[in-house]
Image 1: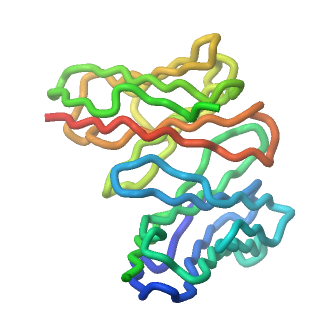
Image 2 (image 1 turned 180 degrees about the vertical axis):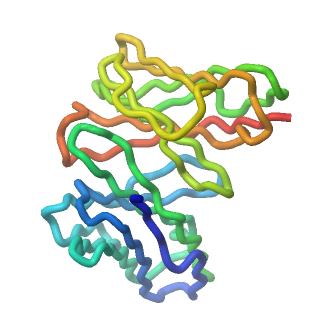
Length: 113
Length: 115
């Protein structure tokens, strides 16, 4: 069964701290992996997409890495800010033509001012 | 470009009723997917449409159905509503639907409450 797990489930850090969110998946035959953030009661905002052939992607203070062989991805957030507070979700896509994403359980991040 | 739009944003229904939710993808996007989000189950894939054809379906009962129109707009319908159908329903669109490198863009969701 294809499952995606995120650790930790919740995280609270002081402003300015660097942090790492983890995502693991059971089936390593992925097509790509996408990180999203979700604010309370809102839809999902795409942060980074890593194709299966890539090792990492960067956008501003965010860096996502992918290790297919170990079934893991990490999202690194540098110099965290209160505005980073949200739920972070990773999602894995398998197969060529399908759009189906399998989502992780999410990490609820709180950045304290 | 305008983002993915979903209507209505909030909906209250009673058990046994049916409901239709609408999603307009980003202009030019031909692939639309639907997801259900609940506190207990998280985000779960419902189905995907591409060029008016259902391409993939998740593990949901037949009460959940959908369709896509020639302009790529999509609707999903839930018949005989149950309390457990209360959830945030999210729609996502993507470009050509065949490239492996394309990002999915999500709408704000429709929050359905079944009483």
